[in-house]
Length: 335
Ligand code: 5GP
Ligand code: MN
Image 1 (cartoon, rainbow, N blue to C red):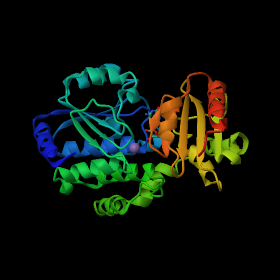
Image 2: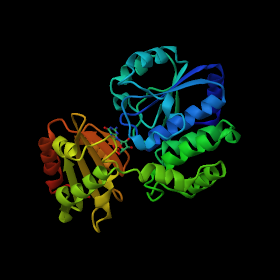
Image 3: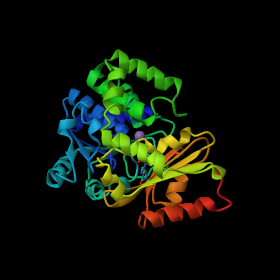
Image 4: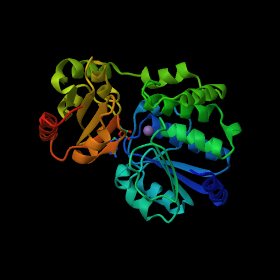
């Protein structure tokens, strides 16, 4: 956001009492971290803020400060409609198209409240009065940090806000190892530690919470389900609803799984097909220049970043995998 926009935005914030924060379908660490960081910041400004999610999210995010006040549209639709109706301003965090919040998008787009888009994914839609968007940002949490600084409120960042922000910075960068990480990312981390965030505790709270079923599902997927096509520099895995059930699947259990094949020498593209919640959800990851956002947008009704994107299958699991194989077996397909 430009400086003059910050001035206008400050005026809007000043006259807004009820503030709604919405994040994307199947929220991840960055979605919840950025939303709850902003929520805790707005509380400090004495605003009435509410975080709304379109559906459930993994239990390993429940420790985030403010989590117990989050409204889930799937289980609390009436309350959500009331809160949106009263909103003076609506923040949309870590996504940039109403498609990403499914049916909740109808309520948000119908609301007359001005929208504020804060996001780092490719190709944003044009629905917001205020846009705080940077595809170079490693996470939406980085943008929320810049946003608080831009409003001149660094002094208001406390341990709660710092811990939420740290979470998104850590999870969206694969613990600070993706190319999106810059010196400024690490400077922000230093600042957040000064404000009270404790890296070892946050890392443990997010990553050391596997159930034995989840750990066995990981082993099963890698041992039994991973298909490596070295000539194509790619690998993929799939998990059917039945297989997930066999391992007592809980939301979040497959998070991070798609990254493992990229640790194989020479593999630069990884895909995971997952038959969860009655849909075929796909995750794509790449290393280097291959743009999985474009691939997901062109063929699987999805999108995301150059090196990390997601999408949906139109057909069942097998049809989706077959479509994928047809695409990657095309001689023109090169990673
Ligand atoms: P994941 O594979 O972890 O679900 O998602 C990878 C990245 O792509 C995340 O930044 C996520 O927000 C984005 N993403 C996942 N699924 C979709 C989708 O269906 N559409 C779009 N536009 N982005 C997605
Ligand atoms: Mn993100």
